[in-house]
Image (cartoon, rainbow, N blue to C red; front, side, top):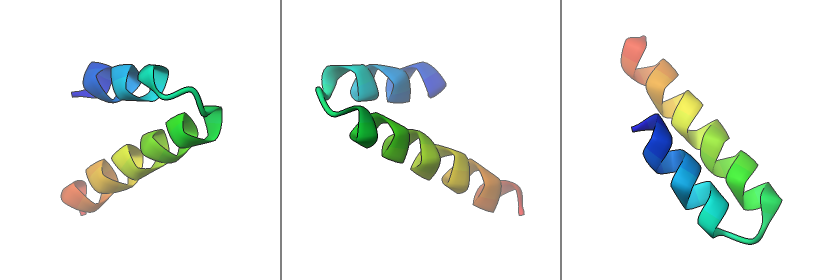
Length: 34
């Protein structure tokens, strides 16, 4: 799943979009644990 998000981020030209998606993924994983 982590690699999937990496590919989505790399496909987008905007670096900010990549960081934003990474943040959402980390937040989603954190909320699932809690």
